[in-house]
Amino acid sequence: MTLTTGLLIALIVPIFFAVMSIRTGNFYYNLGVTGVCILLLVASPQPMTVIPVMACLLISILGDYFMGHQQSDNKYYLFGIIAFFFAHCCLIWYSYNKTDYPIWLLVTGGLLAVGYGLYLAMRILPHIKDILMQVAVVLYASASVIALVMAIGMNVGILQRVLYALGVASIVFSDTLISECDFAGNQSPARGIMPTYFLCHLLITASCLVGMM
Image (cartoon, rainbow, N blue to C red; front, top):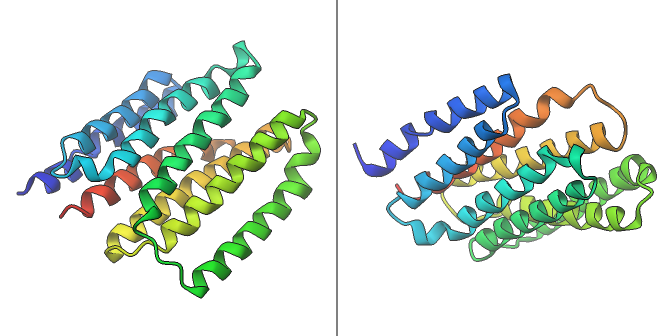
């Protein structure tokens, strides 16, 4: 068994932490998911090639903390969005030199940008009165769409690309559920937020490891 295969098997540890976090709501289990994913990448055969992903996960810990403690300070919500914006910038950084830009990808990106922009304009932004928060949400959503489009167009092995694109799609979906709950007042999708958030971490980590095999 190779080192990379062993690290892929070791993903069962953050999966356990994810299950415990969903069951208990304890922030330290969240930290366990992200922290172990970082450690697995550090221990991988080519850690220098995934520095942007490790930076993304590290920044996500900060964003997760702010989002999890927003009840004590309303500014924490804005800080959380800012932190996750930079986390998505790290994903863009990771994909930058691995992505081709054929016409079909540019068309797909344009359609996603228009579709998500209309969703924000019609469903989310009317409920946000703070201009600064509106700007933060739009910038964050823009970074999310760019990261997703670049993930879809990555010129890597098919399994690595599928895992990575699904990981980025998971966090975009999770963020959409958060917007529905926090801004649109729709609480029905709340249960899906943390599972899709953790799925992002697990899939992206698995993608990086698969790319080293």
